[in-house]
Image (cartoon, rainbow, N blue to C red; front, side):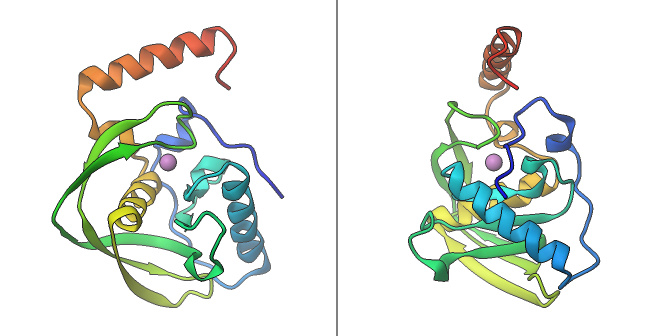
Length: 171
Ligand code: NI
């Protein structure tokens, strides 16, 4: 099932999501499958559960955008446990469509998370994958990428979104 993507302005995007405590349930597997489907439909490389209105610490990532099944990653209750270096690059978010801004992130990070069966693992990623780990982990802590840009740029984006909301072009 493809879910509509929740857009900036909805409180669920800025709340600390709830940790998952029950694993390997049919509901969890279905939700993860739906998250991948919704992410591919929206042409994203990552999706966090709050972006489909589910306030739980679950994120899916596929930097191959569906080209390589081996690159499908599920992160449940993730935390970044180490960061190295830095990279600055354009970042966007399915919940803030049409906007992109340069964001500085760590170049290489290790994330610790659980998989759908509840098994803990660590994974290290660089470049785009490191960016995705940081962006999605932020989402699950109620943090959007625009919190990493300058207040001036953030206000500009907020103002433009408010106009779109008033025009009924942002819901
Ligand atoms: Ni995002």
